[in-house]
Image (cartoon, rainbow, N blue to C red; front, side, top):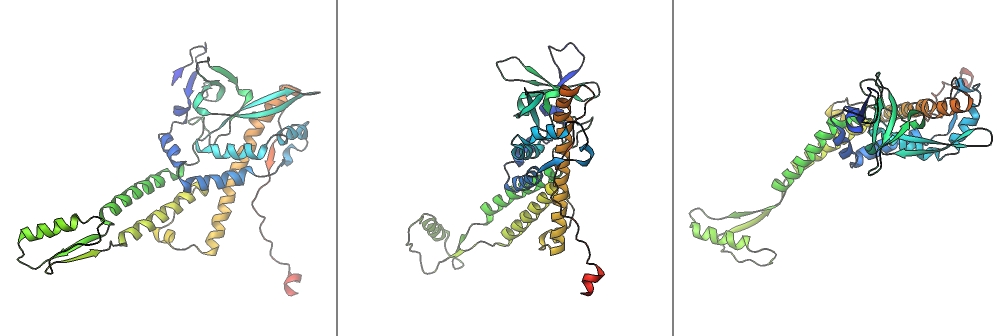
Length: 346
């Protein structure tokens, strides 16, 4: 925590690392290199972001709602929302909103993605974000007013003004799986290689044993080796029992990591994780995944209303204007209705 040198107020500036107050920040970056994590996160981001946007029912009668929504639709909205949802691995994303003068009003021109690594956040006494400061050396830091910042956050709170990472439920499982793979590699390197068994009669002089062992060791890639007929050299293949156990354990951990990210659920026994899921369990899992994507879509819509549409509406129609609430059409299917008695009898 450090004070902003050019700010005469008593408010503080927090860098993007401590703002999360999360000791796992470096782990999240490592997790992004994992195929399992990226597949789960990408599935959620695409499900939430690749949805058509409409006006919510509660904003149907808001003045200028359709006009502002058309400004959003004029942008590459699907890619922006998908990227914003994917950026929740940090817990938050930062986008600068750009306006341009139109014929009769201000219009939304662009949403520019800003890297949190070059930003600091200015908080007020209630720990709400009031401004951003953009640091691009050697230039002086540039202040971006809160009215021009779109900041979707996952579970933002006073304790965590920049939200919590969406990967947080999977951190412990990922660390366990990472350590398991390292141990697996060490075990394979030590015990998973074939070895040569040298047999000789009891009472054989140690000099003869050493000579034969040296000849075998020096054979290398040669295809011929001459040893006395009293010796027998046999290649013993490795035992794959430990390898299979590690493979099953890693497979189980991968499944739990996917569940933690896509369902925010880490329960289930080891046996249940190793057993092939039933059709009913697969349907429930898919439904929970869609529900989590629905939650992310709702978060994006709320933040678009609060951070993008409301400031623009107030700049056009005055300080009391309210921005409309957009709605991303849910991908959750409606529940199947039971057949009517007439159709059942037919």
